[in-house]
Length: 235
Image (tube, rainbow, N blue to C red; front, side, top):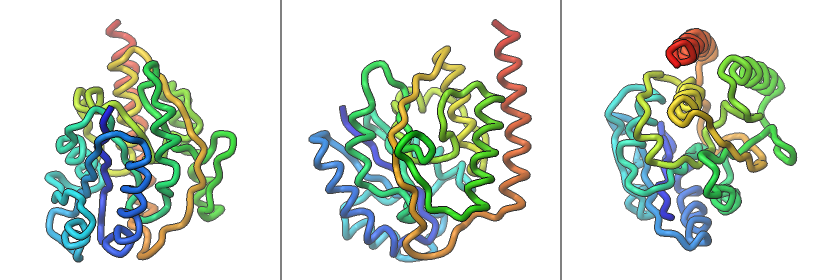
C-alpha cells in the first residue's frame, strides 16, 4: 500500500505550518510510502507555496473552480493506490490517520473519519451540528448510503475507484456525490467508520456561505436522486 494525502487549501498557510509536520509524523508511523499534495487556489492568495516547500509537500494550483474543482484536481494528481483527504484548517486532527489507515481492510472501499459513529464527537456550533445531522439523514435515506457521517471529507478512498467516477458538483456537496457514484460503480459501497473528534479551525475564518451552501445541496440532492433512479431503472 502507498498513500496520496491531499489537502485543499484556501488561504491556509498558517494552518499548514502546524498540520504538515503532524501529518508527516502520522504517515511515517504507517510504514507506507506516501506523498502529500496541497491543492491551492488557481491564483495564490498567501504564502502556501513557500510553506509546502518548507515541509516537503507537493504544491499544485487547482485546475477547476471552487471546492469541487479542487477535489477533482487532487484526484487527478494522486499517483498512489490510497487517497487520503482531510481538512487543511486544523479541524481534522492528523492523529487519527493511523486508525483510518488500519481500517482499510481488503474488503473495504472507503474509510470515513466519523463525528457521529460511536466514540466520535464534534465541537462545532449547535446550529451547524443540527444542520449537519439533518443533511446526513436526508442524503443517507435518499441515496441509500450506509454510514453515519456522509458530510465530512476526512476520508480514505481507493484511488483507482475515484479516478473512474465523473464528478460534477462544484461545492461541498461533491462529498455526497462521490459516495453515490462509487456505490453505483461497485454495485455496493463497503464503508468503515473510525471515530474522530472534530475541532474548530486553528486560524482564519470559515469559507462556507450558508445560503449558497443550502441551495447547492438542495440542487445536488434532486440531481443525485435522479441519477439513482435512472441507474435502478436501467438495470
